[in-house]
Length: 230
Ligand code: CA
Image 1: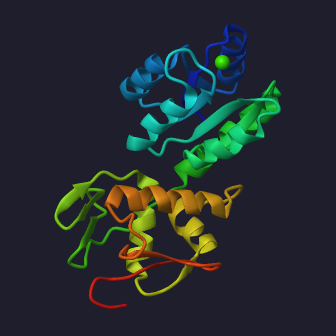
Image 2: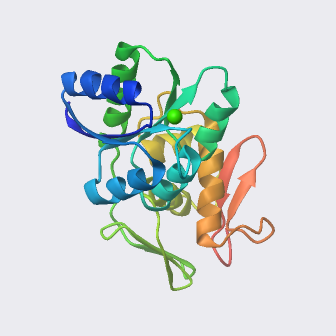
């Protein structure tokens, strides 16, 4: 497996180690040592995966993650400090795919990078246009629109809303959504679905739970309510 990996990390020793370990594993390695440069390099180089340190000079890893998630579903592996379990939760809430705790073992790191790459390469698509009068989804162009207003969605968000809308009226469990929208849900928990739905609702302007077409069914999953009926 090959591909381009962007490491955003300010510790020179860790950067050196990442470069050695990942190039030995066959990856092309790009390194940024601060957050601003990391975001820039991400946009310029479109890496297949990002390794992201939390504590960075300038804008921190959380802000970098947020900027990346506005435009991309690229797998992001967070590098967190030992003992900061809250970082793990915060990372997953922000849309990170996985995390490793520093200091990490080389084999563990490479195994996780491979797993995330496989997961993202396996992600597929459905290709029929869906239009229910409020929501329009065009898989060929990967475009979404609400009430005629275009919405920029990441591939996962796109698959998530497509899956919900194509099964309108039906309650889908987190496991089913993981299966459809993530394709290889190995190692991803239902919390990921919850956070992804929250982000999706926000993007679509469907935050208001009283009127949101994406309804949470407590203890079961989610249901898309088609306008004017179920
Ligand atoms: Ca750091």
